[in-house]
Length: 265
Length: 215
Image 1 (cartoon, each protein chain N blue to C red):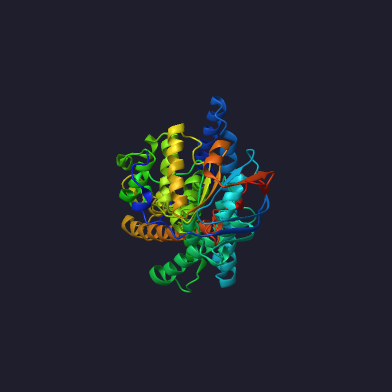
Image 2 (image 1 turned 120 degrees about the horizontal axis):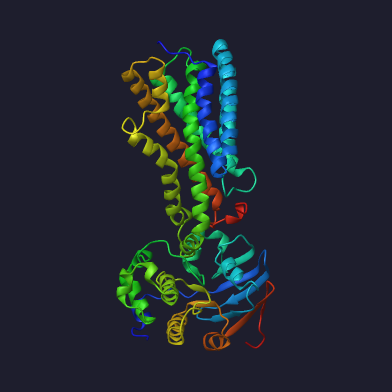
């Protein structure tokens, strides 16, 4: 593949756009300039570090190091998915539910992709395993985060209706079904929208990246479709398990609503 | 108006005796009481005294210690949904989970017979919940609970939002249920209503429960 290598100057020009946005924010007193700059600096530092780490990882092609990288990514994703929840479960439950769901979903989907569609040699080749896991995990993280935050917000808001059903003899599953449905819809809406608009409204980042790097657009589209299906599968699996675990934590074996297990908003 | 005798149209539930021993949770201290089939006990006390907590605790809607039984059957051995079908709690401002009134009933046609007894027409089933006044909501919530044919009713101020005529219609409906053997534990702030409805009076004060002597 032929690609046009980027220089530091090229990146600096792109960074000027972020600076311009921050300047606009200060001028208009929008209050987003500082956050924008911090996240841009954070992204640059994180990507630079990950670039170095991936280069080292690809050169050693070791199963333990690949596994260690995957675990680190999953733990960080768990933190990111749960750090900005408005209503959290008391203790480590939010982090535990989010991380367990993402671990299960991302691991299953990545393993399926590595052992069926892509089949690198060895199957854990970090050049394939880590970027795949990253893409699946990133989207799964959004789904889990949206699912859990919608579930806790809806259940807290709908408490009178849920308890009215429980008082009439409904099971916790029946009483929380509307909240569960709403949480799962919220969790999967971004990926459903992304798949619906794919190619019509937007060319996704991975496909654009491949085309810019010189790949054949049809091959890039095939890869993109594979990735979208993997992402959709991982997001759905992660969101469903997180929301089900959330419902179980918000209720107990006597089919009682346990909002006391949430920290005050 | 009690247009239709309810006990003739709806199968009455089997009478049952409720027994509560040392029931406690934060805000409620070791409550004990017995309630026989067909008996009504009024629960009175200042706002925040723990009356609602007592009713919710008996309905098993909150974690508690102590024992509660129905006809000698320990609550802990009965699946919670089955317990609440028999021992039903009705909140003072009960929630609604669907848009239409009839969607809240397993069989609106049967429930409409009960609704008629508290002055609501069968047409109410086709109304959206948002159209209901607070009084209509309260009466329909009671109808929703009664349609389940519970053996014990735990009612939290069931006439708080009603005018006098509607409140009396609700009382007549409840007296009819008492006559068929249903036991009722009813929170009220109205001493006259307590006298009309209840044979016994329970006072809740600072989370402590005591039965009024000679009530």
